[in-house]
Image (cartoon, rainbow, N blue to C red; front, side, top):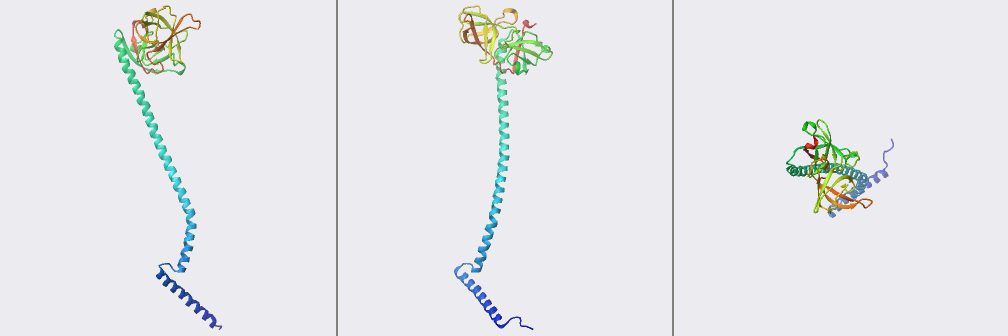
Length: 284
């Protein structure tokens, strides 16, 4: 049999083992003396650290992206909740403002009712008002069952807003003072001026200025802004003395021949939520 190792090979192996053992022993001795890792360990640590750095880059990137997405989702949910709360606050604010407006209107109506001692009054609320007939009519929730009749005056929070023009069993239609259609029965009014009363008719309504217009004026007495305007009772269609508003300004017609008086309504005709109907004999 051939020899597995020659004597030369055996010597080389032995010398190599001695060198390796010496290097390891020397490295350990040097590491203990200098408090640094052995050479082989440092090389191995460097290689391991390099590999870890290469692996950690995409891992960290994925983790950062995942955290960003998670934070974005959390922010979205929080934003959604905050918007929901804000919407709730806005709705509550609207409800509060509506209730405050209704409360103020009812308080004013109590004061108005105290001035109508000659008439029995019926309280009602607006149940319908079409955008196409907004300035001309509305529907209230009281009718013949409550004793209402055609022609009875209807008041808002501070004064006259119209008259009953159609009566049903449990609701009625109200024609407003701002109705300027040709087939409407005009309201006869009087201006209580400092030099005497000035009679006329409500003939038109300026929707842009939200002012009633008085025409067909026969008297020549002076009329000034701020003068009180009430129903005159002339013509038998409306009792006298019901507040309509006050004079806003005085001009002349397009030909400069007669006066044209603009009147600020005592009640806000754009906001009519509740009304008082005076049960007068005129409506019978």
